Image (cartoon, rainbow, N blue to C red):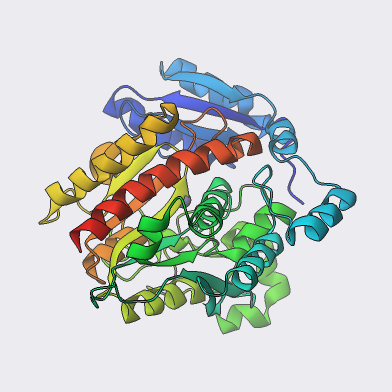
Length: 422
Ligand SMILES: [Zn+2]
């Protein structure tokens, strides 16, 4: 297990291009730093720093006049308090009384989520269907819930479909939690949400990267990538030797750089040991292959593609790989505006709306670009959920419900607009 005792989370805010370069140079200068967000001018970058390097990093920044604040003084403490545990007793009670132990008061393991999905399919068989669309590298099922009241409207027209996925990045725990919350609203709160449930077919994949998600629970809280191993055969045979060089961090691929659309062009790494490793080739991961195949088979019906990430409170519009605009940029922005306005009305949370290159920096091989550019899905968005950096990936479980509520309001606003158009 990886411990982060006395690791500090530092927020740096470069104000000039030169300071951005300084912050980038810092990563080369001092080993073992983890950049949770990439530096950009007048945008904060959050950096996780091992205890031995804290003084050096602060000195480096002070000398160059780069602003910074300490967000977390002891990251291990924040990890320990993020997710309240549940006793065996509580668990048994929940399962007996409710048939499942999903609470939305804590970040659940993958098995709890699967159990809840099974529960929904048994309790609401007329509405819910479970589909296994593929397997992860380690053989975990990729489970999609389909919510449908029939694929045709009363007038006999084919309904539009909506796709939502979560958990591409393992450590972004709020993402699967919010997708599960969405599931609950659509199914268990069907009466209130009848219009959008009846108006579309919903395909929902709460955990796209179950291997990584579980690993972030059991071993390394800040794991991001999949858990595949792309060592070549030669290396495999001399494993004892290469293990020395082939550190743990060299496993896995960044799922959100692995999609076959302008793959590997910008904002992705070709170094297997890097956090944003795009993979040896596009769709090298069984997870991205399974999802893309499934979506491609339904691409004419899917009108909305949403992929949930964290953190920074942004509603991102394609393209990610270039600062050129999509042909229907205004449509995407108008729809996105509906979403962030609806979200804001719930409890005042502010989201930025726009394409990644203008809000942050360009990245390629992302799922939303692929959904838009390759699958031709008109409304494709990446959602960066709470928060804006106070806790980052360690968003307390007590914020799951509030985050779920506001995000569902946004999803519903878009779904309503799409259903009405059809
Ligand atoms: Zn992410």
